[in-house]
Length: 266
Image (cartoon, rainbow, N blue to C red; front, side):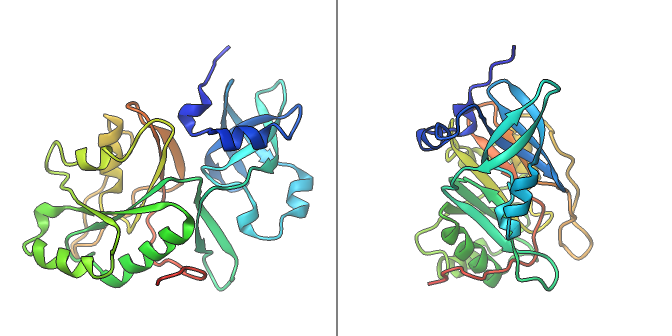
């Protein structure tokens, strides 16, 4: 039988203690989601799961449903699938306004320790957008770190950094370039076993390239920038991945617009 060390997936004492309240159930962590279906990692391996009818009936908002990064309590059957009955209390949650005119909120990622806010140093650079990202990151309960990518395309780095520092008070700022083999080292020092990080930012800013470097292989396909110097969309779904050197990363689709309801920008 496969034995998975769930602590390497971020299962800490706070989640273990809460999971003990649910007898005869198995604790797992959501690693990916596709509409109403989930992949969940447990101490015995990966399972496919869906929420119970009772869970669906009691859910009021989109944010009540499990999301990538959530720890959940499951009933596991002999066929290798499972039913999700409870979502354990989130220690942090990254939320955006759902698409369309609805005021409902959508969970982007849960139980994250560090949010890497990625923005490229080309025409994608936008102070107001990064200020919104920082506000929502702080509001999530996680720690934001700004990652400026594609520094090889920038001719006025000092000027951009000076402008950024006016809105990124108390936030670490990292400058990277995918052209340099060691361009990801400054990001890697924030990641350790049991910790969960998430990369957010517009499409094509280099999130996928950074994750590939952290994984030590081309796990995801990357695409170049368009003629207008903006990025092409690469990631199509949210997914949680264990990094070989320790830690967990959650990759999210690019988000050009971010709802900031409830964010404390002060």
